Length: 168
Image 1 (cartoon, one colour):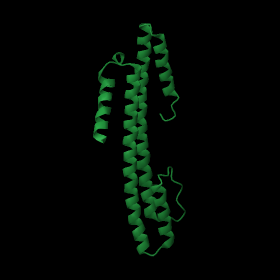
Image 2: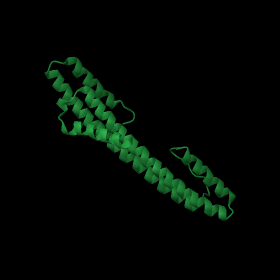
Image 3: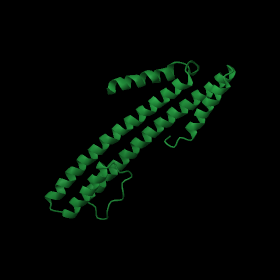
Image 4: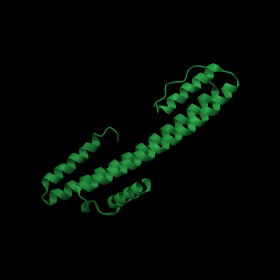
């Protein structure tokens, strides 16, 4: 159930931000980071899905107007746009020349909102990764001081892996 999942994520985030990093194992740090990452991507996917639904509703209204006016070419153009949205195509290809002004305007609003959501989730993911790197760097020092050189190397490798993560 989604509420139970969100409570689990909140508990894990509590561990990361309230309990000192030294108290967490590498596995617990990784689990909390992955849980937060999943929360961010899930929330973004939900928001993008809602945005697509709103854009599709706007397209349906525009289509009905163009259909009532008897403009077949514009109806077909709008139908193509609806198919692109339904297939979650991103980025959308340029609109055909002569597209109705309502469609151009709706597309601009959708594009701006979509990019805004991608930026928000991207910033949140980068912030989470930066926090994880900070915790891993502290863990490297802690493990080295305690004589766990292998653990310190593993923590350093996890930190470097974040640098190479293409999704962040």
